[in-house]
Image (cartoon, rainbow, N blue to C red):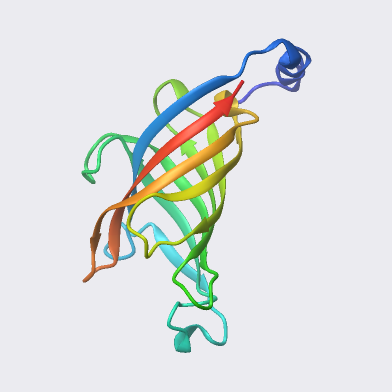
Length: 169
């Protein structure tokens, strides 16, 4: 959603008269660490990563597909792009900085930005904060609840359900 500076200025000038909108979205994050359609790549690790029971210091770049349903071949609605790093010395938890880019439908070109701690060893109801957005989701805030839909221990590939509770203008 490329807009001119003038269009954004006009939007901003009317912001105090705008009404907040609450939007709930659910989609699935296709976490693919292996195979020829891999979407996650290790980019760094610390001196202690190989000795750490929590993989502390291991950092990945992510460019995962977002789909309407949990099946890997369901309709693609966007991509989740950013970083995920193991950031806890004592428990398995990621620090995630992700931009959810919508590539289809009425949100095409818009993004939602998420930044927070994700205790991935807990299978359900992990909460992450929404810290911003662009396009339709400009000035977004809210929360994301993630749950592991499925996980293949032999490949480390997984499908994660994301439910977004977004307040925006």
